[in-house]
Length: 116
Image (cartoon, rainbow, N blue to C red; front, top):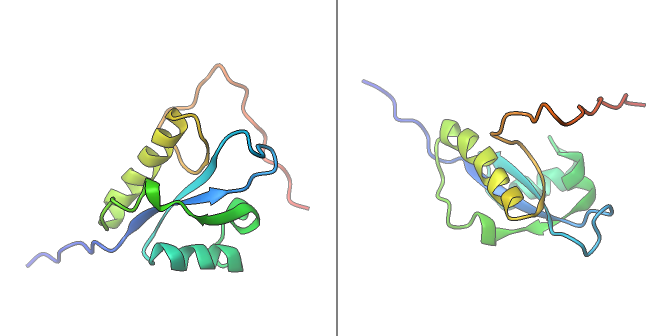
């Protein structure tokens, strides 16, 4: 007997106040979680498995971008997360998060910064 996949994972969007883009363009972070989105944001802000950009610049959840997306399996959320991030990029927003797109070979690659 096969076990059904758990459908409790969510994608979520955090509105950011990013100092490089003050008042110019909306900035967002897109992630996925097995927690409730508000709990995940609290963890980011507390430094628990956090993305630095959310810990430092996260303002609030942007429910208008994800509230109608139902909970899903981990595999489906892993596909939905970059798709949602790319959709927001296509709308002209600054987005921190994954992409489903192939890298553009014509653009120079950024080198990773050394941790101090």
